Amino acid sequence: MEIIRIEHVSKAYGTGDTLIKALDDVSISVDRGEFVAIVGSSGSGKSSLLHILGGVDSPDSGKIFIQGEDISKYTEDELALFRRRKVGLVYQFYNLIPNLSIEKNIGLPLVLDKQKVDKDKLINLAEKLGIKNKLSNFPHELSGGQQQRAAIARSLIYSPALLLADEPTGNLDRKNTDAIMSLLQYANKTYNQTVLMVTHDDRLALSASRIVELSDGKIVKDEAL
Image 1 (tube, rainbow, N blue to C red):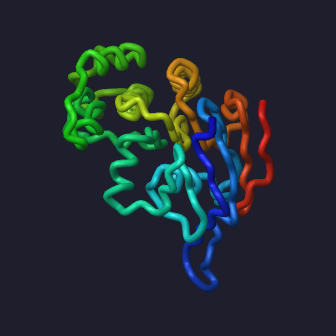
Image 2: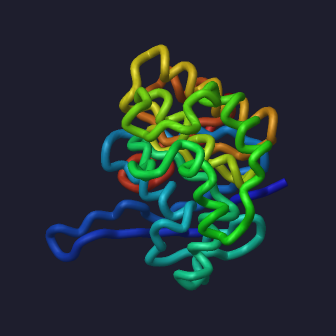
C-alpha cells in the first residue's frame, strides 16, 4: 500500500546567478513498510527532499501525498500537527532540549500535543533502545550514541507511520553507527514503519531495501535491493 506519492515537485533557493535548483520535477512513490536509502553527492537535493516530506519545508510546485493527504496544501498549523503526529524526524544533530531530562525529551511530542505520556510505553521503548538507565539524565551527560538513541525514541513515541532520518549516524563512530542502523531496521521490521534515510555512506545504504539516488535535484537511479 502506498504511503508516499510525490508528483512533479520542484524547489529552488536563491535568485539570479545564485539560484540553486534543489529539486527539479521529482516524482516518486513509496509503499508502507519500505526502507529507502536516499543517496547522492553533496548538494544533490537529498536533504531538501526529506525536509519537504517531513513538512519542514514547502515545495515551489508539485504535490506531496502522505497517506493520501496532500500536505503541500497544509497551513503552518496543520503542518505542525502533521510533524508531531505522522512523522518521526531524526537528524545528524540530535536536537535534544538541554535543560530537560531524557525522559521528558522523549515524551515532548506528546506533551506539545497536550496528550498524556504513556509511561510504560516510554520505558519499554527506552529499554529496547538501551537507554532505560539514562531517563533521569540530561543530554550532556550522555554519549553521542546515547543521545541519538534518545532522539530516535522521541521520534517513535507517537508510533508514526513514517520515519525520516537525515544522516542519522554522521557524528558517530563505527560501533554506534552499526547500533543505530540496527535500531532503524528494528523500527522498520517490528512496527512496519516506513523509513527514508539520507546517507552518504554506501555501506549504510546497502542496509536498506531500496536505494534512490539524486543528482542535481533529479532522481537518476531507483532500485530495489
